[in-house]
Image 1 (tube, one colour):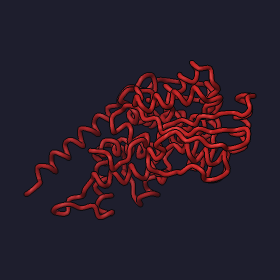
Image 2: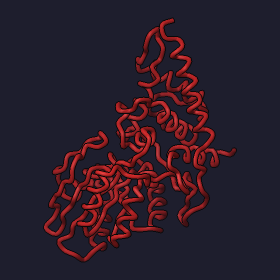
Image 3: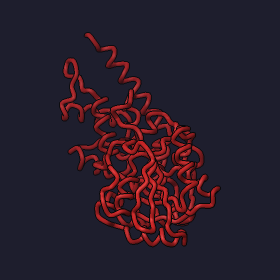
Image 4: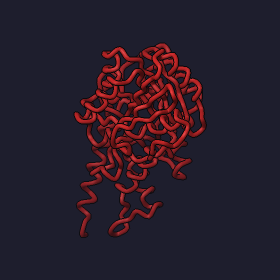
Amino acid sequence: MDASARTLSLACSFFSTCARLFILPAHCALVSSAWREVRRVVKQADVVLEVVDARDPWGTRVLRVEKLVDELEKPLIIVINKADLVPKDVLDRWVKVLRREREAVYISASRRLGTRKLWIALKKATEKRPMSVAVVGLPNVGKSTIINLLRGSHSVGTSPIPGFTKSVTRVRAKTWLRVIDTPGVVPRLEEEELALRSALRPEALEDPLPAAMRLLQLIAGKRPEVLESLYGFAPRDPGPDEIYAFLEELARRRGFLGKGGQPLVEEAARVVLRDWQSGRNTFYLEPEDYGLDTRGWKKACAPRSSAGEKAEEVVDEKARGEKGNVGE
């Protein structure tokens, strides 16, 4: 398997639980209460902003929301947030891909990058004044940050903790613009999938190893220098044994040791996921990693890669071995 095929296979494994044609955007059944709230807000809005993470714009889309917006015949703009974490040429390619379906812009609130383009897109979306704009997306993609940018002040609280916004918040951004912030839309997925989408805190995971290993496999296979820069070392290859050894070494370096000096790999896994969710980990996916190019679809992802299955086998095997050593 060549490098590009291996990267595509690992990317397909990254989000796999309810995979359809490509890597799973968050289009599984949404938590019913959150969905009712989002549906109500979208109906009230003149324009909808869907905020996605620049490191993975495709995987952080919520297709059920997009379908609802289309059914209601509302204009929708995809806002690629955290653009400062990704090279401009990659962002430009993502915009080309997404604009095959609808309007898209990229933005970095921290650097005031893309603000003008967002304003232009909003004004073109509808002639209605005053305009009501609903801001939707997964938890932790930066919806409240976008609202603060539109308003020009920190009127809406922000936090790197998923699910910080608990209820609908209405803000008057301009005399002609009213913005509605919604709680993060949480798909009904397994914990592993939610953690990889930054929708569930690592501390809330019963077992953080599968999610962390899948993330590390993808990074090690594509851009291991990200791990080298972040942790001072990196796996030699994306194989599951090497990834598990990486977590063991990270646990030792961070002082996460249990009985008999055994490395607490679960704590190291939580560090990896926490760094991903907070943005300290600047790994990003490109359209080509999804089998996409600027002209559209190229090829489909397999629902699940053997690498992902092997990673789970290694986790189970290691866990059994550690449990067998307890009390020895």
